[in-house]
Image (cartoon, rainbow, N blue to C red; front, top):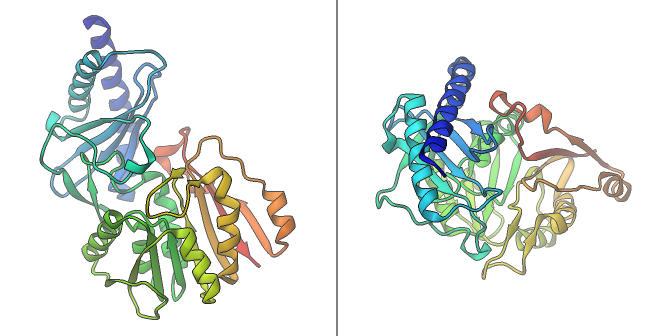
Length: 341
């Protein structure tokens, strides 16, 4: 790519980011999101996804990823191009380039999904952000995903409002954001299940940031606080059915695809979603809720077939209700609310 073309794209990106910032800054000041989606492949020839952070360590920062291009560009050209875009982002938000972190999102070996990615810097860019009154640790440079998904922000709020005196199960809990929201909402018990030691430790740190008691647990318990359970979520569900555990709210936010030596087989959300939901229904109290979401772009969900098998089940697509200002006219995961009536 010519130097002139790269410079033109850099200016296009500056103009777009300034326009987005002007649109979102008043909303952000009123709603305190902590982080928000600043840019999402708005210009096709600049296939970046960028999130803006208001942090305790830096006044501002931007973290994002470069997505696959529809044409070939060698690694040397890509590096030069990314450096230029990094400078453009810094200019657009009036920040130092050192707080702009861009990673390349390529197809990964599913077995390496919990591992750190290679970065130029040896130092961890771990920062604390505050979403409303809740604090979260995010890491801008070590993993493809930073530890918190902005597109789930309104669902976290909803779970917080609905959790008072409820028994909560957070499957595939990742870094525990839903668990913390439930704790802030006054949940009676919270079980946070994930197969990754890394993510459970991250959940523990997030809970400690918010003065929430945590402890590791391998079986059902009535102790208060956030219980950290390291196991395959599908195995946990089978055992919970056997031991007759019951929950009022179940959060089911699985990865699109996952495989690990610790798992029983492969998780493929398109193939496994219905069986996961069916197992959740077996441990859900009457009147209870399941919040199910899918990050798969072409996910198909046969709602009529599921409701025909389970007449007590009401299913509502709440994706649009969970769409916040920074995701208007942009793609976001699909979210359903399932009620056992």
